[in-house]
Length: 367
Image (cartoon, rainbow, N blue to C red):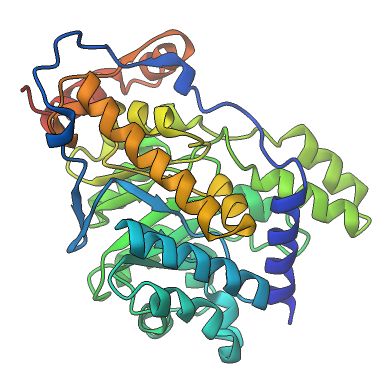
């Protein structure tokens, strides 16, 4: 059972090793304070509707785990908390359950514990090039009665994985074949290396309308695979992974690129989102929602109350951030970010700065 064992490796390593690398560049994002907000904090709304589900705040716990008993326990804790708080969650790649149906319960437990929450299914893009199609996609959606499905891109991780799938040739054409046949919305999700303008543009052009940028600055899956390579005795692969563990587009830059490329799409900012200030800055940059992974995983491992405390703090941060910028709701906050230093230089040299300015204005309102 190679896939379930690999997922157990990933869970263990992310919990006990130093797996973070790079910078989100959110330190180069400022959100101007409004001294006279002309608002009552208690009346500020952080609610958002996503895929037909109303969330109390624009926060999801992004897909991380599943496929074994330990992962099932974590999924159960996360599900119970997001159900109680009115948030959303994704599960980890469900490939293990497609290959081993007896493991489906480790994912299904999420819907059982969160009957009303936003739940996102998950499959890897390489599997679409290895025979997976509508049947498998519908299977994983039905497995957890999902509201949407994330197709994750993890080329960087796979390149450093001893048993990695490194064939991405023909992926856009394959996605184009299935996009209109899938009954639920598709989210294209990176896994720590960030989404770039060109990729988002071409995928938006074929009908994808939701993107989770998962930029660098948080968990480095290249670094996770570095630890696995060392454990397997592949010192060459481990050394190269160490050299390149900060590979990727910083999360803030990736949000700007994705918003410029897809001004009408749902953009989720994830990758190194560690606190409520990060969430406020990401939304001001133009993201619709934020996704948290590693801090939620560690909190869930410690127990339900720890996760609840962390997510409640995130929710309150967003509410106060709206209040202090004179924003009665989330849409008013979008477009208020001021970008500086390397982040602005990146956007200008990449040719996305003007498009980002135009796109964020379209997503924002003035109170």
